Image (cartoon, rainbow, N blue to C red):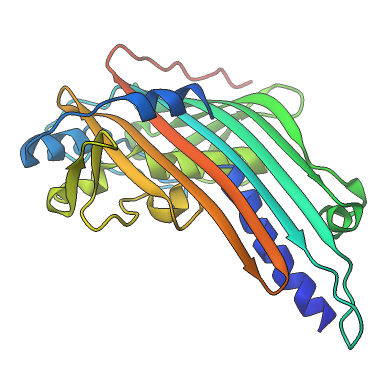
Length: 294
């Protein structure tokens, strides 16, 4: 019984950690941008314009949503901020005895994504702080303790000639090429890459105009029924109460903004937090040069 309780708590906390990896100048830009009121044709064109050729899961190349369109060329600034805390009560007596535990997460990430020349460049600047009671830190991370990390990393994706390749640096800083698979790439980079691929390309929303309505207060388009949606959904920020706003500017998708909060108590575990995500797009004038591999 004790092991089952620990396992359930670990799964819940792992969800918080996954949320945090998925910034912050982009957040304020996306939030403040006022989107235009548009027609369905403009909506479809704007969403199709974010398409790029990539698929990390299957490692197969895809064509641009509109095959008659020019090759994608844009930059996306992706920002993320998250603060989360988890507390558990002590359980005494009976067949289960568990100590009180607590943990807090503070995550900021800024990711610059450049799509051009049949390639994508990701520049990731992140600051992940985690603190908690010693008993919980050991339970989740063993004797190594705190996995807090701060740094800046780059990774490239190429989908030229129908093949998908990834470029990342090894522990010595030398560039390595990985064909078709993310295996061998740093776990943090894998998570960020997969999240970015799924969120900056909103071409799946072509034809979904009728599901959205312009919201003056939010300065953009939100679902008619107010729920989360798109290829982002609640996974965009990892909290089910997330709102999601699309802002079209000058005929193109200018920004996406989402915010959410969490406050719940279940089986002696209290979880609370808040987060914001912002993506701001700039079109044209971009180029990507793949790194040389020894």
